[in-house]
Image (cartoon, rainbow, N blue to C red; front, side, top):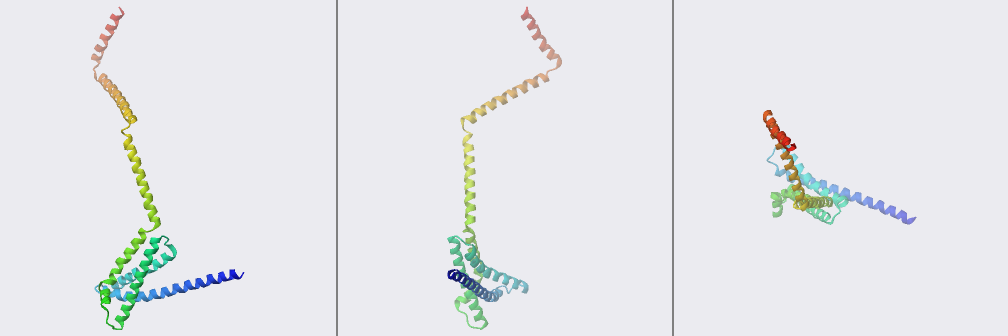
Length: 225
């Protein structure tokens, strides 16, 4: 009885730990959203105000949404080794991005001079994150076991159809097909000969048809005598 109670207490404690970890991740992600928004907003300063805010919000959604997607996928959905490895690498990369955004934003607000790598980060590093996120998403999509099974099934069906067509092509040179072609040619020749004879008889005039029949009758009478 004590063992069952301890198991229930342990599960309840684990549930509280998971909920607490989720809240901490949510708070840190929201804090990173603010810093990322302020940094990315400067990159769209040449656009109207509404467009600038929209693009900045979109950039924040890409970065922070990719982190949430990777965490959820690693804990709930990703099953293969390659998927989990890519998601771990992506989460580590995005954590570094969030850290760089938070530190750089605080230094900018406090008017603290930025390090050379932070200047480079503001110049081109922060924008390059979008391409990196795209690469991680593509890698995980291609490493999906279901997608891999679909590709293997399509490859199998393609080889099967290719084998069937090759067998049909080879069968055209067999003796059975050649004999059938000769027999069909003879049948077509007989039908064509009958059509030619029938059309010739129909094209003769009536008088000539009688003359053609009379010699035959006379010849038959002589034969009887």
